[in-house]
Image (cartoon, rainbow, N blue to C red; front, side, top):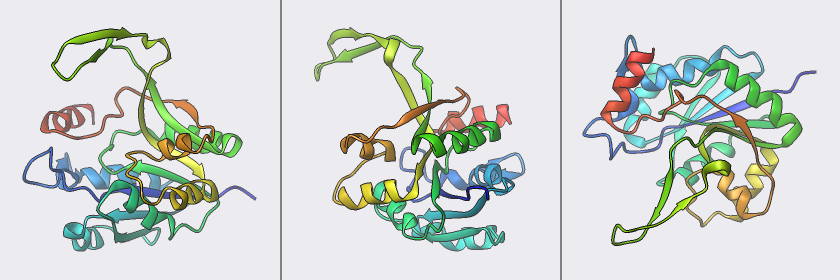
Amino acid sequence: MYNKFSVIITAGGTSSRYGNKNKLLEKIKDKTVIEETVSKFTDIENITEIIIPANETIIDTFNNMFKNPKIKIIEGGNTRQKSVYNALKEVKNDYVIIHDGARPLIRKDTILYVMEHVIDKNAVSVMTKTTDTIKEVDSNGRIIRTIDRSKLYNTQTPQAFKTKLIKEAHEKLIDGNYTDDCSMLEELNIPVYIVNGSYTNIKITIKSDLDFAKLYI
């Protein structure tokens, strides 16, 4: 019997850095950002449910947008961590994939690679090797030192976990404010392993990111 997966796609933010419109409702050709993101997961057979913790202002829009019985819209929390935890309480499968709603350029082969590796490793995150030179800077804007980039990676999503493991981490650290789920396991000294990702798997944060996504699509 094959392993079944749940997916949590985060959509609880307010797009405060983007502008006066929710970035998830912006169009990339004929789909909104959130529709493009969700479409990467719906056709994968092992994925049996997709849970979207959404900002309360767009829940009705999402309910009208998504009619696939695999997809369930719930209310998110006031932080990313709380939104994910709300969704984890709905998860029915042994493995869960957590992905940013604002990363519509995720490739299906990357998703499949994540699904394959989490079964062996219990906790994995898509990452890319840092290519820029990284400087540490003090509060006055003065460069303190150059950091060795040979061991530095940029964190992306999806991140995937054995459901029991990540749910217990959320319960232990329920009063925290972690911006990604791997950080919670790191705090608890639980190993997390990397899956190599793509540099095109950007998160749409500002309008120029959307322009790139349109060009790439």
